[in-house]
Image 1 (cartoon, helix red, strand yellow):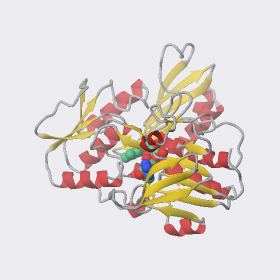
Image 2 (image 1 turned 135 degrees about the vertical axis):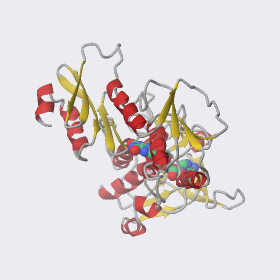
Image 3 (image 1 turned 90 degrees about the vertical axis):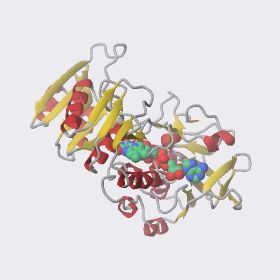
Length: 383
Ligand SMILES: Cc1cc2nc3c(=O)[nH]c(=O)nc-3n(C[C@H](O)[C@H](O)[C@H](O)COP(=O)(O)OP(=O)(O)OC[C@H]3O[C@@H](n4cnc5c(N)ncnc54)[C@H](O)[C@@H]3O)c2cc1C
């Protein structure tokens, strides 16, 4: 555990995990030096908004996570774009290059007392759609073509791309490996409703293709997922599996070095890949640096999306698997144009999903229900 007094916390990675680490340290009252390094040019932005606003000109200012005034008032030194290339964990120093694209640019050194790696992910297939530049390039390509578009991958990003590109006037086909899109997040009946929604708006779904079956007339896009960014950790001798390995305190194999967000692989082998989970891990790392002694406990899983004006929400334990589901009761009902799906264990709510045109604070309602383990009557009465 690091000391509260003096020193420098260096945070590498200017996504939500890095930001929440820096802000939480200040909220806790830390007066030590905080240096935050980002790999992308400009101020940190919400990358989640890129795929939700592709149908119109992207304005990064709108998606800013923090402005320069707030960085100054919080006394957070923000350096970007830089590439951190090496960690010397014995001397507790990192080495970074100020012009990442120029291998001849000089290498700078920074000493740390605590180091937080918040390095995020990289797309599994290149070109992928992760950084602002990827989406700007995609917009330019779409502007210059009237070709049909084929999206490989039917997770949230694949469906978002299909929806946004349809709204730009292109004919889109999604290639789906499972029985319906967003199969990881949605139970079967709601997945079928999503299929209907996409069909109603002219999106085609093709099933069962496991490798790109290139149609020469289509523009092919890949949304086949991401993997943790582990390069820096690996080359610096940290333990790495699918992600940077952390213990239940989000500490890596090297003392005073933490890993948070999408780049971290937890003791149970899980990797989060979700915004709010990256945020809560960053908050926890700051608390640990500040002296927290209880292990990190993730909050309830939740995800939401919006397609063609219909919102999709999922929280808690969703999927049916015979080994762990014995005795669980599943229930589905409709109310005011919304389809609900709930899962109960020992008569208590453990998972809740819905799709339809629901008010924004419905997500909070669902989370409260899962957190408090409402009964069936409790769920329906609270609607
Ligand atoms: C288009 C898109 C839409 C998404 N939509 C949703 C959504 O609706 N809901 C949801 O829950 N999740 C969504 N996600 C996932 C979510 O964005 C991620 O889980 C979250 O951003 C992870 O945050 P992070 O801070 O761990 O990493 P990131 O946001 O990936 O940030 C990591 C940063 O580290 C920098 N970096 C890496 N290596 C180095 C280095 N060596 N030196 C310097 N800098 C470095 C990178 O440049 C990057 O800026 C979406 C992701 C994408 C790409």
